[in-house]
Image (cartoon, rainbow, N blue to C red):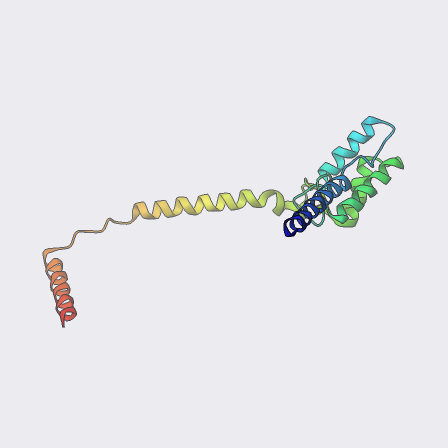
Length: 166
């Protein structure tokens, strides 16, 4: 009887997990967005693929499961259905959320660090590496110890060894 209860509990858990997986996978498909023209659907799909989810940051609106992404997908869908152009949709979203909503923000003074920052960091790192290598190359090699220095070192080591034996 205990085994039957355990099996029922496990089966219930598996069914619940399966239902949750399929319900979330179903909730985030693009099937709810329909267009009369397949080209419009392709434009919609391309556009939401180039817009960043504001919550996830590294996911596009097309791939994100966040509620904000769902809302933005619906907003983009509504705007395209109303006949607004791709440029108008992008202008609306950037006016509201800034250039951050775009995976490829425009090159302008406020985005220079995004576009050129990585190149500057790599260039600075390369420059520092070359300077360090040149400095190491120009430093004199360590000279061998003279006979007097070697005798003094052996004397110090012998004294240290004598103190350890005590």
